[in-house]
Image (cartoon, rainbow, N blue to C red; front, side, top):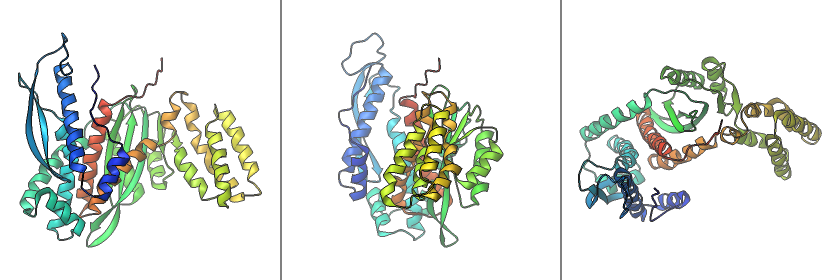
Length: 386
């Protein structure tokens, strides 16, 4: 049985609408969530609309309106009903979780007197100015309990682990500082993607990474065959301390970016990029090492700094050759994490500067929890190990 949405929108289109303002966004939210809830009811009934099937366990019974305050104003959704009862869609609740986290962040900023004109506009659209510290505190407590349970949930077997960091502006003792946001995702043995954890801290990078990785192990993370990440110095030290026996693979995307800094002329960049891609696209490690030596010699005179950098760094991206060929396209980069980071950036830029670490962690946790839930019901990677 398949479910088809009546409307589809590209992420770029939605992002553009958010960037340019609120007009039009409420209708998109209404359509997307209404479609998601209808599909959830069909799954619950085990039958599409008007479908005759022996598996059907009940019948649809119209819709009940429900008005929800969101970042883009009040939206009235159509909540699907079931004649026999016992059904309520979870899609809206899950989708609005990060909206509530964003609202709390903006409310904290407003109450603390640090809101900008843009923040004030968002607050007004979502709930007017009738906000009290008590209201914000109650909402924060309810949401934090849910997000903490998710962040501390037990983990299990993860075959491939991906790590990355980003930074958000946070107020600390009257100053604006960069807080490191550490994110871990993984692929389970059966091919399921998961968001494993997130941590926000202003602490020293290596110390923060070590505590974060240890927390993953304490929650039951096991069976990791490969860690893929960039060559963050603090991450490297922490990884060796906590996951010392696990092979490490340096992300190809970041290696390509790093190499550009050593290309002496703009006119050479396309050629260098093509040579590096040729190395990584080799059928096996031996061939890749042969292509690497050719590139080192090729640029020894025209770009000696690049040649030396290639010799010292590029082989760190060869570890993926030790894994099954049909796994390699999934583990060669952290691009899946980069897409997650773009979604985080899209949402956090509304807040701009977070009033504290807890507020930053709350919003990003809510976004990642939604992402993980979407992955669980989405397409799995097919490893075909047998």
